[in-house]
Image (cartoon, rainbow, N blue to C red; front, top):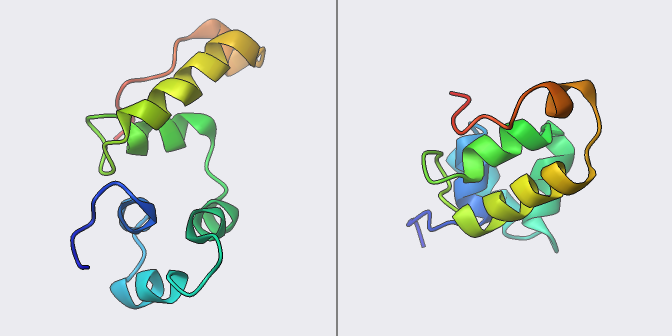
Length: 88
């Protein structure tokens, strides 16, 4: 149970949540939504946590974000530069 294996617990850890707060998330119907609503990360920050070089290593989800940005985002940041591989 303490193994942070690419689920909401590793995402919470990536955002610096304490273990007691991570255990509390288990009681929520959508722990990942709770984390995203609390920290409201940009797609670039979320991508950096999910990429293979990040703390969560969910390259499948990072790829979905990357593809969505390439296909849909027209903001100045995304147009002027590609999504960073590692923002840390």
